[in-house]
Structures are given as C-alpha cells and as structure tokens.
Length: 273
Image (cartoon, rainbow, N blue to C red; front, side, top):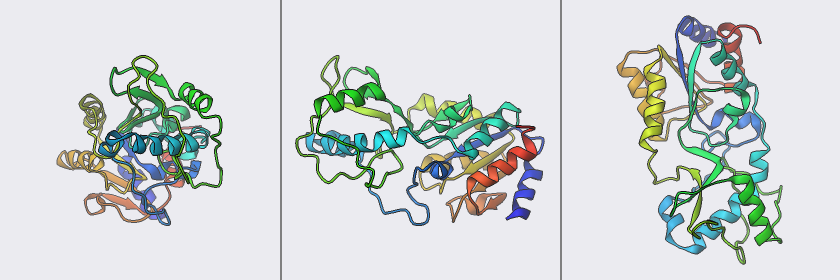
C-alpha cells in the first residue's frame, strides 16, 4: 500500500485536485456504508414507494427519526479533516460528496457540493417550504411521546434504522400547507437537481486531477464524474477498500481505508496542520 500511496502523491503533487467522496469516508465516524465488507444487504425506500401511501411514509419516518440523533451526533474523522486541510492549502479545489451527513462542512471544507442532498433539512413536496431537521425532530417527539431512540438497532448509511413497528406513528406534515415532508435528500429513483450537478461538474472541470475516496461507484453519478475526468485525460486516483466499478480506469488504485490515505495525502501535499 505504501508504494501506491507514494505513487499517488507524486502524481497529484502540483496539481489542482477535485475530490469525490462516498460512504467509505464516513465509516470511521461510525456511519456504516451500503456496500463495504460486512455491510448488511439493504433495500432503501425509493421515491415512488415514499409517495405511494401513508403506510410507506410512516414506516420511513419512524426509522429515520429513530436513527436521526445518532446520525447527527457523528463527528468528522481525520479523513474529513485532511480534505479540509488540503482545500485550505490550495491543493484541493473542492469536494463533491455522495454522503448526506454534512461531515465535510463540519470538518472545515468550504467548497462542498452535497450531490445527494443533506439530512440537515426537510422540505415540503407541495409548497417547497424548508425546515431544520432539529425542529422537525422536536415536533415528531411532541406528536409521538412514546417514541424512543433504540441504540441497539443498527444504524444505516442514511441515518435510519429498521424499526420493529410503525403502528400509531403520526406522520409529520408541513406546518404551512399540510403537505407531505421528506428529508432534503435524493431518494433512489429521483434525479439529482441539474443546478447541483452543474456545480459539481465545475469543480471537476476546474481541476487537474480527480481523487475518488470511499465510493464503490455503483451509483451512476460517481461514474459520470470519473468519465468526465477520463475524457480530459486527468490522472485519477481511487482510494477504497475492495473493488470499485472504476478500478480499470484509475491511474492509481489504493485498496485501503480512506482515513489513513487522506491523512498521508494531506501530510505530503497540504502543508502543516
């Protein structure tokens, strides 16, 4: 691994680097990923299922609320902090993340495109009103005083758990128009907003290299950025435990945890802490 890391550092030195991150960057913060080694098989709710009926929304909101406090309490790890240091030094032009946990921003990165949205906000599907997730959590607990967060339930990558039952749960609705609410995240089956995707493209377009960290690239949005970088013949470094869909197209592939490798990149390219 050390030889691969050294090769990547030599490749990235003096270049403006765009970074694409996936769930593997946040596993050291206690948030599991979807596809890493040992990850349970999960079938996240699709947008169509969420819209289909009250029972689906009830099931979603119970699981999402039960996992919310633990998800929101996660702290940035040394990998997040390394990327912030690389940005502050000028080596990294920005971070495009598939994660919805907000940990890059909390670690100090300033140019971050949250490709799949954020769990910090909730939106009304009818009138577009935006709510702070913390305020909604208080409303949910007021309307459902029986609900408790069970720390024994395994936390999912999107901050949810699989509850035993959703019976009796009062679904939160918009306080403005009574419309249906959903977290401001891109569900499976939804499209990434075009403006957000263009902003992410600008980060890659303004860079001389691409680092992909902690993503298996199963989701097509990640592959699209890899393909754009490849068409421009940019060096591509992939850091991930296990195989990814982009390994054959990488200039350097490092099969390792993202935290240790990103720290090595920051130590070599990002200047003093």
